[in-house]
Image: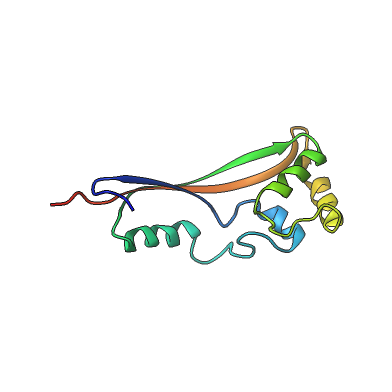
Length: 124
């Protein structure tokens, strides 16, 4: 539901988001989709199939750090990276990831997102 001439900005999670975390856990949002058609291309096609013109497409990566394991644990409980995340059940995988991802800046997550800007053509 976008009026003619209106613009939509779509912010999405890319297939490589927190890839190393998902590899340690062996599951997660978009798990194993690291090759093949990028998610941004699929979402672009959905917008174009809905009659919108994609005017801008950008993928971006950034580093996120958590000060303590407790901070990362709280984060994982709140986000859909693992819909079934449980601190007790996932303890071993969590500890393994935290040990390998700890840097002087904190526990590292490599993030991968994208943005699409699309416009509905103005009525002629």
